[in-house]
Picture 1 (tube, rainbow over the protein chains, first blue to last red):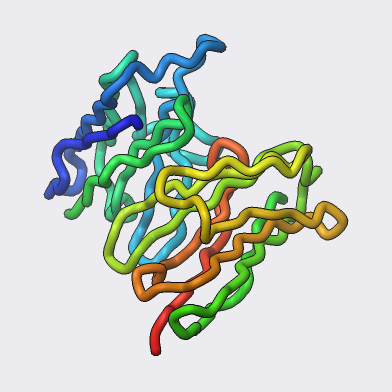
Picture 2 (picture 1 turned 90 degrees about the horizontal axis):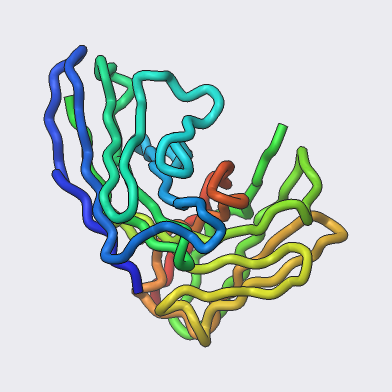
Length: 110
Length: 114
């Protein structure tokens, strides 16, 4: 089974500053179809999860361009520029190349 | 617009069964698979598996075989999660999520307590 790890597990940031979350998988997430099914999911307090980014770097419609994803193979990063109060929550990376696995989550606080 | 509406909270005794529904609207139901995700109190997200809405074929994640069953009623664009022989550790919020997790239901809290 694929194991997803995230660092840090908790991040305290100042409004307007940047935050970065690393996600590593125990195996390459490149699918046989050539895509890499690595997504980033946000869960604000008391709310259902919400997809932010799919296939490493494709922002979902309506997601601010302050959110960006990068990486390849087994190493991925979510960067949040100019952090705003509404960004508070838990961020999960998630792979769907080999069935499905979520990372442990990173709690973003301001 | 795409919507996934889940059934309401449930309180069950250990050993009982529960069925959670996820009614889809705003798109062609068979165009996307439905995933199920569990979130225990204060814990992270856990992928339970998915069901192919074209064939009805389910795929279960590790730890979700046996007591967990995914099913469909395409005539009403609804996916179901049934959990049997409930245990206290099944207490969680259960989410359905569409396709590659593009859309999520609001979640259903299942509480198992005597």
